[in-house]
Image (cartoon, rainbow, N blue to C red; front, top):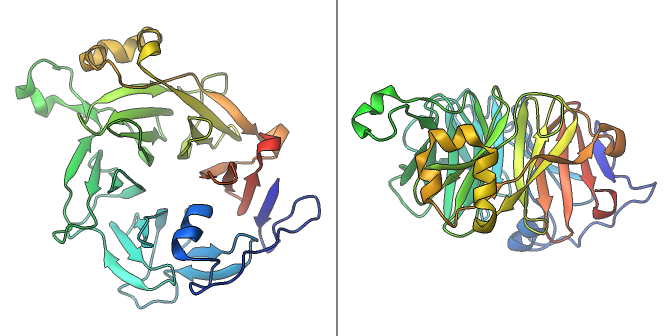
Length: 332
């Protein structure tokens, strides 16, 4: 396990990893290679976002050395799109700010203010933002100069599923939507964690409907408390979730259509509420939660965010105490 935080270096049994050769972007190889090999590590509570080399060497930070109009106040989540633009959601500013890899401010994602933006992700050529106050996910095309959402996925349900005229009766399905992840599988899906009603829900990008859920309140099997960040591990075909209070990284596998009926039967409440689930043959479903890292085995304490390094098949975890830990396949 590699660990970095609170002034320490990356360590692995006393051995330091060798940094990549420097290049024109100053943080290791070309921009595209660096983005592919080094997923962003996000945190909360600090008005800046640090940038590190793969060996843990501090390079620069975003948002603290800029003018008042570009400075971050309450950054929540971060993602990097293939063009090299860094996007940071700021909860208090109600904006998603754009930065270059060198830390230069590049404006805002949307011309309209968000209401408590939290999770931000990218996939299928779009950028997704959790608008937690409005309980929706807005999707933006960075190639669109209008800077407005091209698609919105509501995180609500209505008791009157057969009658669209009762749209005003919609009730919040996610109490406190936090982090979000795009899954480039089939026609595309988006997964969202619910912090207050601990669960993970999966939505179809093509239909905007909820097609699966996993988890529940508690400390036991198939349960979690205050889930924060999440990511997709393609080599395992699993979604990973930071189970904050339970000191563990949970995983749920994506089950395809052949197992859909079993999954619907297991989630009887969800099946009864969303009749569309029975009509979406071919949609994936989520299996039960299983921990892949925890406090006793991997020394994971109060995880906040989780990311993957697909090239090296590693899991990167940030903790509330300020540490960043990298878990190698041999310790998972």
